[in-house]
Image (cartoon, helix red, strand yellow):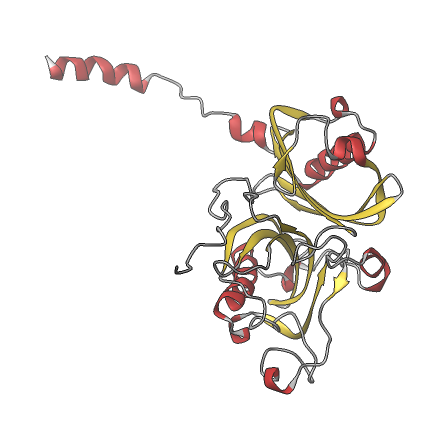
Length: 321
């Protein structure tokens, strides 16, 4: 009986015409498409008109890890784009990032926005917003690192297309950025694949190029001045958790990735949740631009899957009575 069934089935299978699924083509959105969708989204936000954006029915929106209802948050507060604007695109993942300044009424913010595009519809929007009066690492309002002027005119990100022969591969770019975070966790600047003298700007504020004290002369740096590899011994970072790569823009040799600085248990410093824009030249990290904020002790971040950094540590954790 089983053999008869097989003989009946075989001619049917041989005469069938199989049609491959078409969802891969429907999901396609190249660089031009991603740029257009990102532009339309930003325009909809600053005009307070969600209906003008190509939003998917499953659209999810967070601002500094807090989920916002449609039409709330930046949909109400944003009134224009700032003078410094950059776009980074990744057709492989369907993600696009806007990094730069944005205006809320007459006040500027430094932002990194990631959107996820599926079938030319936006299913995710993740905002990192740095405001001048935000709380700093110790929780005091107005002490956050922030300098929109320097970001705009002092040392803005390059706006470039790198020649093909000078590009690192997608896998190499991810490796280079991951080595930076590994250097922080292991407190060893030699792990980091970076140019000596590499810079870092946090919400636009330059944090490198400062004289290194004698006891930190080997803590990265160049010619006695700090660089992006310096300071790992004083960061108080137990782990760089929730590492996520939003955009790997091979054409621009830029990686946009986010993570969370997890402090030592019970330490009063707040966790830092950030979106890093890594500029890479010749296979080495040239500099980092960050949009970031310091997280209240009880807030879960990043509030996006896989949620592996999505926990606050209690002040009493790890202490003895």
